[in-house]
Each structure stands twice: as C-alpha cells, then as structure tokens.
Image (cartoon, rainbow, N blue to C red; front, side, top):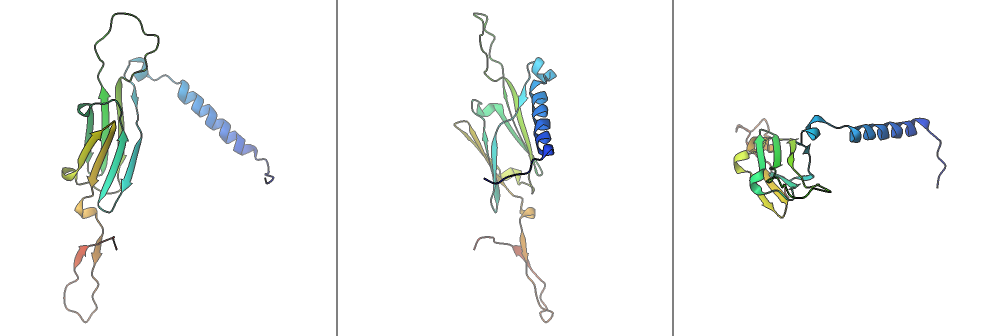
Length: 161
C-alpha cells in the first residue's frame, strides 16, 4: 500500500456529489404526485458493420404497450402500462406494481434505414435490428494515376477481411 497525500478537494467533491444525490432523491416532482411516473429502463446498443442492435429490458409489458419510432438518426422507445380496474375490496399495505410510462431516446451516430428495421419481443426483452442507411456506410474510392484516362469509381467498402 502506498502513502497518498491528503487532498481536501477530493473529499469535498464527494460530499457535493452526496448532497446532490440526496436532493435528487428527496425531490417530489409534480408528475409523481399526479400518479404519472416517468422512468427509464436499461438498454444495450451494439454496432456492427451494417446494423445497430439494441436490446432493451422491458419485463411485464405486452407488445402492444411498446412504441418504437425512428426519425433520421433518432430512436425513441416508450412503453406504458394502463391502470387495471380499480379494486374496492381491502386496502393495500404495499403497492409497488408499475403504472405509467417509461421512455428512452437515443441519437445514433448515423442515419437508420427505418423501412428495413425489425423488432422482436420475447421474455421481457425487446431486440431491435436497425440497418444503417446506405448513404451512411463507408465507401472506398478508387485512386487512379495521371496516366489512366478512366474516371475514378466509388464502391462500397468491405470492412471484413
């Protein structure tokens, strides 16, 4: 173990972070008071040569409750549980089942070909395959010497060896 010099500013930064977290967690937003809680869900986005593959965890949602929209390079996923019929018998001791809407919006590095996108929902996981638009894929430009008279050609670049 090495000896480290004490830096009071490092500890002040962690104290500031702790106070910020405390204030964020204790703040009651108007949407929570009105019963419309918006929150988030975890995702993984993987980029391949031709596609983006997004995996989102949305357990408990039905496929008809999930909405996916693509505009250019912006992807929005939202899901909303509708409240089930109100129960009059008994009273709740704990009520943690979700109601409300979850939304995530992503700006991808390139445009997406939305008409070729596909979505699969199984066991609470949404898997989106989003093909990159042809104009955003890398192209290889053929270089010619001054002695050649043919026009340079542009062809799709293959990134696999």
